[in-house]
Length: 319
Ligand code: NDP
Image (tube, rainbow, N blue to C red; front, side, top):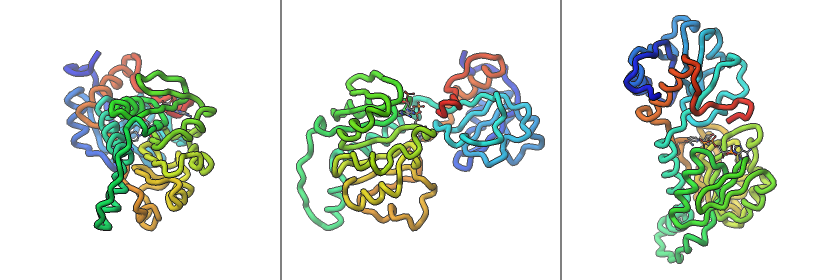
């Protein structure tokens, strides 16, 4: 049942995010659940009165003494920010946000970044800076092979959209998948061959203990000379130092990076000044209150009634 038009749920929700606007989220939640009490973290008088938490990167100890907590909602798609904390109350379910608008926004970024590489735009940007009319014949889209690592809610849509542009798309995930027009591979044994075939690699994996450092130097060296890398998931999946060196030698021709091992990327990091790197500050996709509030409200109602939760994070699997 949708939460819309129901005022059944009451309770207290605490909101914490340094990046998202409290008032916008409060309005969106109250439009779904008018009886919900929505508080900023700073306004909590007694942690024991909190029923639900809607959070992005809460500080250490945040959940301590929230003895009535029934549900933690991550204000984003990745669960890695809650990994290895010692204040998570046992048995409190955790959900994340995963909605079509977020997937569409991410697919838009991936399309932009991938087509930019596929159409050699960094080459033309450099030529323009030199004031040079440098003709380079466009490649047939089908001759450009893009590997999408991670075929979840975000990766699967991005892979389909890339295919719609006529690019040759390979996909890689943990379990076998079927996506129209996409050559899907699964498991660690297949990764080397997927990387070796790719002209452009798009990283769309969650950060887990299995994916941390997955694209290490040896795997980055498997890439074809001049290949491009797009990372929109988490910086720590890629060995940033090895990536920087391979970008410097040109083995990796160019990169579009939305995420980094350390964020904000420190001011003196060499990536800032590399002409073949495009940097954006972790915003490839964001949760949109108006569309995400409904799934959050449904989960708040369901956790109270003992119903099924959508987008539940499996903390054993770490995503
Ligand atoms: P999902 O959980 O829906 O999908 C994850 C995908 O990665 C699945 O296909 C899964 O395989 C695969 N995967 C997980 N572990 C492995 C592994 N060890 N080996 C191979 N494949 C693996 O995640 P989303 O698509 O919703 O999001 C992906 C990530 O994007 C998020 O975790 C987050 O970190 C990042 N993100 C970044 C944003 C940004 O602005 N930069 C915004 C939103 C998200 P299987 O299908 O077999 O389970």
